[in-house]
Image (cartoon, rainbow, N blue to C red; front, side, top):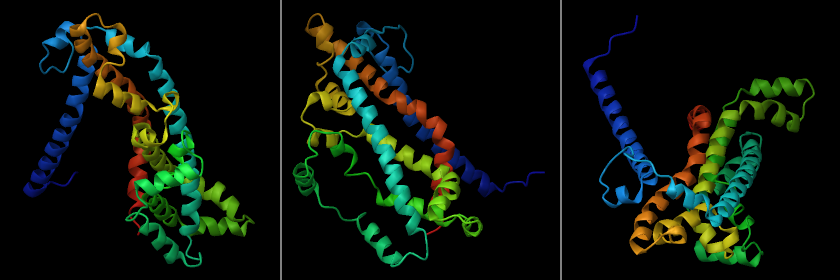
Length: 292
């Protein structure tokens, strides 16, 4: 039998559920509104109010987005950046966190303190730009994935996760003749899939949504990422709509549909990937943040 909840417990749960419900509404309503505008014809958008579902379907906005070649070029650049950046981040973060999790590491507290220090202080925008320029990474994907390849926060989370694993597993493997490399890839790595999924999701979403570094380091439009093109569409609104608009009024109306269509197209991959990683994300975050 389930224990009966007290009145204070019920009140607390009611507040929690109400808060989560409000947060869900504030997240879903703008998304539904954007999807509705992207699927609505120009005459409906022109007199549009607040509706969550389209009353009449029109895919002209998506047709303009799909026929806009710059969108697909930037889509490919973003996919390359996200995959490359996530893989580099996972490799460097995991290889850096594993030795830090060992109590036998010389000056372990010193190295951890140096890493924590980078969470509060950075070189700044201008020194970072000059560094990227002087080492020849300008106008390349490496300027987007290498500067932020390792996050100090995620490195400490992974370190705490690995440190929480039972030491008896590693000891038994070493008794059987395994060295540190074998222990890392045969024992620690399979047990660390939750935290790997967590770091991968953080890194992937960060790379997918990033645009500021592309604006600074990338001069060639053919190498720009999707979010930079989306920013241009949302701010200017004429890059896509003007290609097929007939008249100034139609172009203005159609630009709103195109903006929302481009927005939906840009966030769709993340919406599809996140549900498959959510269970690992929650587990990895909780377990990696328990032990200090």
